[in-house]
Length: 152
Image: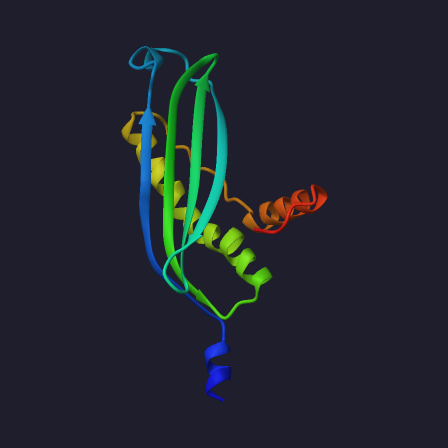
């Protein structure tokens, strides 16, 4: 009976923190004198690594490049990280938890950090839309299977 209790899945958020943060407005202050007609490009990436025992670090990176016409108004990037205690999951469930569930937890923090950074740079708030990490995870699995790659 004790072995069964140890086999129960466990998930616990230990800490959320900013791992890296950057902001660049290469055309300021001239960009503030132009009519504002922005185009936004968002790059999103996740990575994870196992720490001691059942602890895992997941890092969600959001990189935003905003152009006003042909000129880059600003580039902002945040690496929002979390430490999670995860145990008792099979390999497929662990992969899904690290690849979709944990980034889903981190995203609102990363979005708020980016938004605050951009506003401090004197630009309008970004207000990024929610991201469906389950769909992105499924797409990545399908891509890996099509290429014959092993699941990481």
